[in-house]
Length: 250
Image 1 (spheres, rainbow, N blue to C red):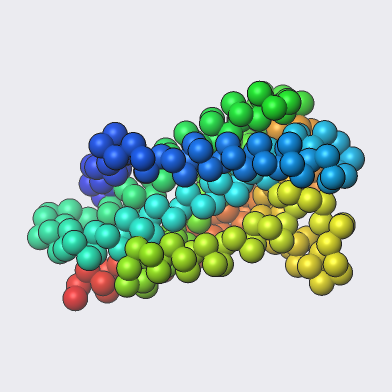
Image 2 (tube, rainbow, N blue to C red):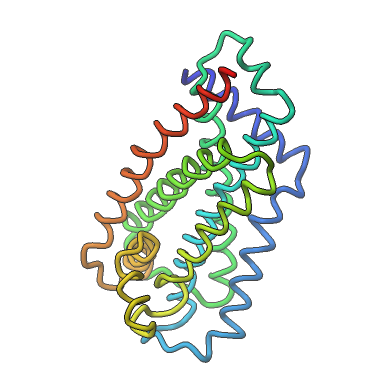
């Protein structure tokens, strides 16, 4: 299964070399978000710290989560083109198709993290923690993004078109990222939204990133973010594999 998954991983990464426009969402979009929030909204949002240091961890978490949409779109396209039927005829592990695709997302997510950190450094973001903390922060980011790749994989397997898969995923994920501490302190939200934001896994993960990157107080955010990431993989990976087996068996 591992060998087959690595072959699928290579296949999905080669697509970016042949279709470089697919990387726009990982380069232009996050850069626009950073510049928009820093220079348009940053002066109006009070966070108790430099807004660049507050914003960059949130932008990274948002971008790395949306990266899972590639899995949903790619799976729908493979199903509609009959490529999954071709995989069925090969002596390969069925779970390798999903494993390879989600691993490809992790590689692309790492590229996106590097891009956003580079832009953040240009606009004033600075690390204020130890090297091991920063390293663990990057690992945790990739794990969180990997979890949402499995969620999007399940969405894609239930969708009939690439457009519907992307719309369903964004409809669910987009409000979750904004009803969190990614862009504004949750204390500024109305009571009901604040209560939801405090238990939102996006808030927990963003707060963990701020501690690991900038040195803000951690509370329980680091270990809770780790538990959330692992828990989402444990729940959604088997569900996605089970759904894939049913779809590929048709």
